[in-house]
Amino acid sequence: MKMEDGRFIVYGNKLNRRQSRKAIKWGNMLARKFDYDPNEKYTLSLEDNPYGEDIFGLKDIKRHDRGEPIEKEGSVVISTIRMGFGHYRIAMAGASAAKAMGFTPLWLDLLAIPGITTEVINWCNTWYSRFSRLSQRSELFNKHVWESLTTGNRTLPGLNALLNTWIVGWPWRFMKTNVKDYKMSELFRNLHEALPQDMPVLTSHMWNCMGAVSAGMTNVVDMMFDNWPMAFQLTEGAKHGVQSPSGYYGFRAMRGFDDKGRIMKPVKADELYYVGHHIDHELVENIEIDCTARLKRMQSSEPRRFMITMGGAGAQRELFKAMIEHCIHLIKQEKVTLFVNLGDHKDNWDWLEAELADYGDLIQTHFSWDETKTFADSIRAGAAGGLHVFLFDNTFHAVYASNYLMRVVDVLITKPSELAFYPIPKIFNERVGGHEMWGAIRGAELGDGTVEVRTIPETLQAIDLLTHENDLLEMYCDCIIKNKSIGIYDGAYKCVELATGKKFERKTT
Image (cartoon, rainbow, N blue to C red):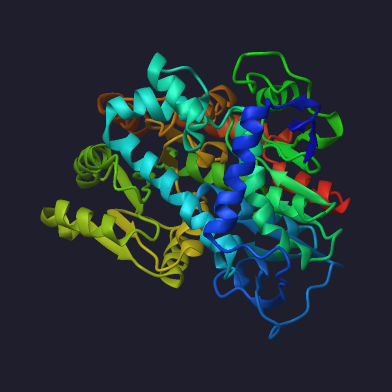
């Protein structure tokens, strides 16, 4: 990152001196707090990924010398962290596309590397988790703090001043947050210096991207998340794969990225690319087959298959309870089959099991990947009824299970986060953070999901419409097939192409 006259410069835009000094102090504070050694050397090697090797041929990058050597030829690094499930899901799409294009995906989870990466990210995640959980439990906090923090929109005058002064509360949309995060991510330089400098790297979070670029890596592609442009996602020196045209314009113009509302110099065209949605190869390749199966089940009056994904914040439980209780009535009528993926959040199962104590005869549990895969494969062309609950003991299967189950599900019910981009008919329930609003807008306008239904009655109405009527499911499936034909879901392939120079060649039948 360039600096001139005590001011950081991002794409030709200068941060003021006061904010530049705060960003430097932030990085120095973290370096002292976690005993950063700029001369530390990392030794890295490869092991088979215990969860993704069978799925993607995935190799783990580990901090030791006991595994296979890391070779640039024929490989693509997939760099991610767990912060919610979205960044893992994007990385899986990159791994899937890389495998489909003939590369070996090398999984670099910064939270699986002992040392400062794990310590710093876990510490920073405590603030994110604290704010996110509170936003889902307090309507006032969500409205006046979390929405402002996640969008950059102004809040109450005194509170707005506090958020923009306190560095932890700097809104994500502003360039000052980009610089702050870059100074933190410089602490990950040593790790990335242990990789070949020109190795192809796909990143699913800006901290991964910033760490790689700060180490001098020259072939870094950031698979950008969400549909609301925020300055903290940019890393000068990397290429960026943006999922929507509106997102592309926002990043290109750096629209709204100055905290005083000034017009900014644009991002260079050769560092920003509209690529489409980041989707697994298996899902994209089978869109026509899976949509045809949905319509066939609909025409045969089979129970409509809904899937709910539940996060770990322990919030929105009132909404989940209302949806599940509403669906139980429909399950008994053989109108609905409900899948509930709890991910790796056992606390949610403890809660849900108690709530469903009177409906044990309807519930089937699937608490391992092998069991889940076998079940999904068995209902691909077979019948399914009842209420199915999924729970896993690891993050990888917790995330990928939703992707795998999508192929045998009719409708996904989700908040408009990264799942908003997936090619399956969707009901968008209430967002968590203002930045997610535009995910629902994207899905609704592309015709593969509802608008955001922000109340329980609206959500239940959407479930009823998609259960008892056929027109919406028909329209969504039709739009998904058309979207595929114009490359809407090709983002993961194009990001691999940006990193490797190799184009994806779709098989024709």
